[in-house]
Image (cartoon, rainbow, N blue to C red):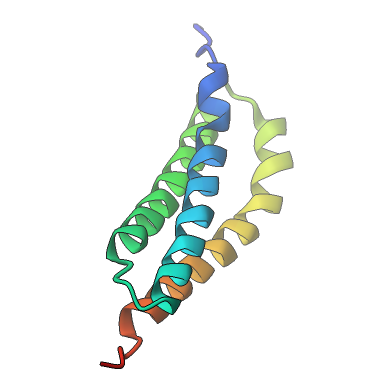
Length: 104
């Protein structure tokens, strides 16, 4: 059976998207507090959150293809809860600025 080659860039893709999601969520809040429209930061944050989840799923799929069950048993249980919590937090943070009433 041919083994699927694991590229180094793919390992960190989900991490980079996660950092982008966090930074854009912070910028989203900062712009909302100053009274500016943070819609682009909100879009980037939610998109990067979705891409983080896709990147993590992609790594898991590669481990399944490679039949690397020990990696799956080691990583998936510990990170699944964290990904759920951070995704919910991202939705809440970005939702607060969307439904916040502006004072004019």
